[in-house]
View 1: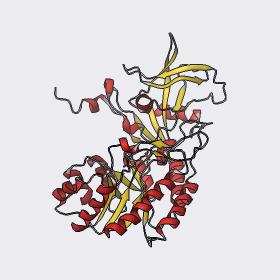
View 2: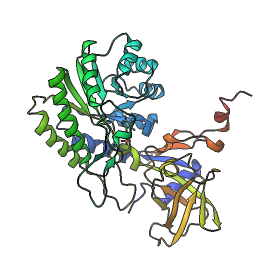
View 3: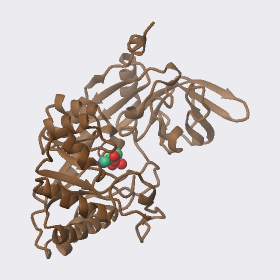
View 4: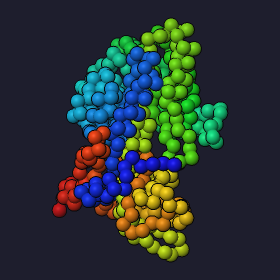
Length: 419
Ligand SMILES: *Cc1c(COP(=O)(O)O)cnc(C)c1O
């Protein structure tokens, strides 16, 4: 059972002021979740979450997370500029985890005092060309290749991903070579980063990743004489998009990582190593809804409900066939005895938020909440078919609602055109 964080009456009042579709975020949920994460890793004095800005690049959200002690994980000039304008800078503020990086991007990240995470060994030259040197604190991204799996499955949920097919990171020999070269160029403190599986529903993912990286850190420090100062576990802790899926328990995850730390790093004499995370989805997905209204019904070979949002507002179903749960507001207790495709208006047949979904009978004008749209939702939006980006709203802890990004207008859409 997934319950919206707003009621039908609340939403009708909000929609009277801000027309659908819109994304709405729950400040209370975001803050409480950020505090749970912080508590789970409080045993590590250097712990820091750098929120993956690409998930929800909205100043009001970045500021809330900053107040909760999070920095920003950026990977482009615009994301760096966003962090800067939110007052998030310096080593504690910015992790720059980019790939295929330009000199201008390295210069901007360095100017803001961020920690630079190198995706590839050839980027050492790019960095030296950009800065005339390398920073004293530097991170390298690791890719072990092959297939990454976790032995056990939980409630039938498997963790499996294929780093060997991923464009990111360096091989093991490249990592040692990169450390040595960076040390020769003046680097003094090193970090290791890896992202091996996405949207994991397992309390074992971070602990398993931590074991791999802690072992690697101990070996590399021994081999190269480079001091490993931090380990960046990156993103990948998932959320249950389907109501029947198990939720991750961040306290259990934190304890699992602590166990690995005590078993590997402490005996290696590396008890000062700080842990960083770059979570995006876990920090925001459940705390954002896409709210849309049913505007048409169509009865042909299947039953369709046409809504006023489309894949431009939330691309995941169209792009990955991702499941997003839907609540028909005011009909939470009605039987799900109608089978619908819930579609947007793009001239593109994959523009469907749900296919063959059992829902209560949908009437025209009903408000639909599309769940778990708080991360990789609005931010993946695009302008296909001349669709304008919708607004983002924030439900404050006191129950008030703030506009945190206005909807695009036709003037915005035309602003770059040459007539
Ligand atoms: C996308 C990304 C993240 C966040 O991933 P989530 O699945 O949202 O946790 C973190 N780090 C890097 C480098 C990324 O590209």
